[in-house]
Image 1: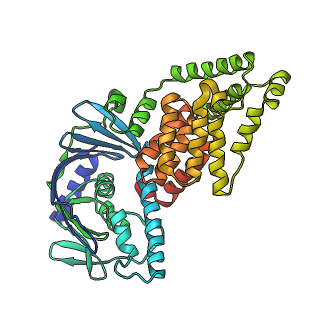
Image 2 (image 1 turned 135 degrees about the horizontal axis):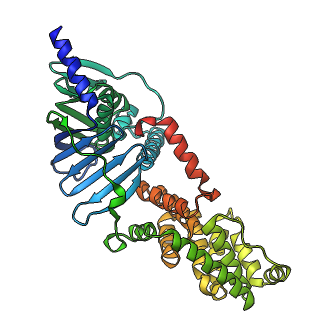
Image 3 (image 1 turned 180 degrees about the horizontal axis):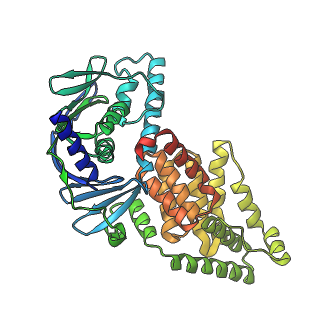
Length: 440
């Protein structure tokens, strides 16, 4: 009875704490598999984590991650420069469910080709990616000594020490989120962690891709924390000059765009359209109109009869319309790219709009890397085109660069919040939240 009363008091004390601090010593060991030429060396990390109710801070050397689950955001903070990069939590779930689907399709293709060297085990894939797309049977669990063991057939997927520090349910869930976003773990294993009401002294996770990886996490007893959530608004976004890739530079540049910048850009586009009509440059005027629609998501400024007649009578407008028409045949699409290139002398100051159309044709042809290069060039010339950020995000996702894909989509939605082109992204996020609520 005394032990029960002491445990109840400990749990009540843990629940009253807004946050707890826990230090983690993490050792990672990898082993190769069939065809693996290079095995990563062993790795050791010392991590300090602060676990709140809907947030957590994870510090590893000079690198800090702040997770805000209420806002579904993650911030990577560079302590040396005291700058941040914002990411969407949707990117992790989005990438992993796509990768799980791809692995299933690859396994089907290998089975059809009678390739048996790399058998696909859906439970192991779910363990490595920390996500599942269909319910499966409960994992086998047992108690061995002072550990709860989770197994898939003969493979020990995880060991959770019964020696633990009681914490509140919300803080236990944050520890499970730390594992989910950092090391993986089968959703059933992570659900057990989240529901344990405690942080285990030792948690060992074994995942199998082609080879295997064993991660051992040793936790010091959790203690009450005086740290609160990070005030992200007080930390400047990462500067364009500090970015290391063309995509990161264009996204950092976009993050710095203010509401005043957006308004000034729209005024400039309107002025350019009016000037092009006044100087009888109909194609340039029409490209300006298209830029307006792709930048704002709004209908174009109304045209008078003379302006409509000028555009309708222009051969270059007819050539542009033909080049932008659907081209189901690959050879026709390549010819459309060539026709677009031929219109550059008539595009004037709006040549980057031709580049935008060409980049999207490259994507349709399946060359997503070339499309990314082209879209980055467009946004370097004019960083206010929301539709170009949508296209850039689409291509980044297809090249497995999900974090930057969501950064691009988020930036485009900030520039044009009501633009219908982003409905597909909104719907994708809604599906992820409904089907994988554990990520949020």
